[in-house]
Image (cartoon, rainbow, N blue to C red; front, side):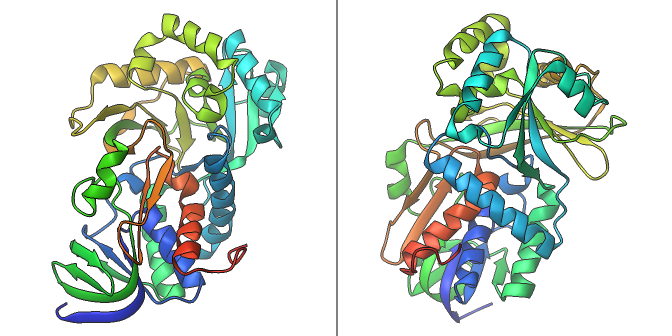
Length: 382
C-alpha cells in the first residue's frame, strides 16, 4: 500500500471491539469505512477476556444503559455473523448473609428488573449438576456469552463481507488529521476518524489522555478442562458484589465488604472476583484478577491462580478441573470513569473503555460516537 488511499467517509484506528462497533454503526449509516490496525490479527484485550456481555451489576446510569443496548446489538449481530452464543444468563451465587442482603437490595432496584432470587432448593431443581452451596442466588436472563478469540475475527470478516468495511491490518498509524491519516504504509484519505487506542496511552493524542490519569490494568485468566457438565449460565460469586458498581454502590455492600476483608482479604488485594463461563468444547474460562500500574509486569503469580481456583471450588461446590491455559491481558483503567469519549481534533473522536466493559458496552458507544460525529438524527440505530 502506498500513496493516497480512499477517499473514505470514516477511518477507524484500532480493530478491537470498540473500533469494530464504531465501524459497524458507521456502515449501517451508509458510510464508507476503513479500519486501520497495527497488529496483523486480533491479539489484545478484545480476545483476552470472557466474551461475557454483562448487563446485570453494571454501574447505574450510563454504563448500565449502554450494556442493555449493546446486548441487544450482540443478540442481533451474532447469528448474522455466524458467532455462536455459548450460553445465556447469569447465576450470581451468594454464600454469606451479607451477600444475600446486597443481592436482594439489588433486586429491588430498577436494574433488577427481570431478575429473580433463587433459594437453595430452587437452585438444586434448576441446576442439578451444580451443588452451588450457600444462601441462594440471583438469576439474570439478560447476559450472553461468546468465545472472544473466535467472535472478534468472525465479526471482522462479517463487516468486510456484509458491510463493505475495508480492513488494513499490520498498519500502524502515525498521525490522525482528517482529511488525511498518515500510516507506516502510506496515507489514507478520510473525512473523519474514530481513534480507539485501548490501553495505548502514548501514541496518539496523549495530551488528551494524560489528564484523565489512566493506568493499565493487568488481568489473569485460566482455561480449565471440561468438567463433564454444561453450565446453564455464567456463574459469579460474593466477590463480584463488591466489584461491580451496580451492587457495590448499594449501602448493603458495606457490611459485605467488611466481612470479605476479614475472610478473603487476599482476594480483594489482588482484585479477584469470580466469573466462570463455558466454551463449545466444554472447557471453562475462569478469572480474574486486577493489578493496576503504568507499566504492568507481565508475570502471573501462582498465588493469584490458587486464590481464583479456591473461589471457584467454594462457589460451585466442586473441585477445579485441570488448568489447560493461562494468560494475561491489559486494558486502560480509570478509578472514576467507565468510558471516555473525547474530541481531540476537528472531525476526530477518541474512545476508550476504561472499566473492562468493552464487550458489554462497545456497540452502544459506537452508535453514540457515529451519531455525534455525523450529526445523525436521534433513534437512527433503534
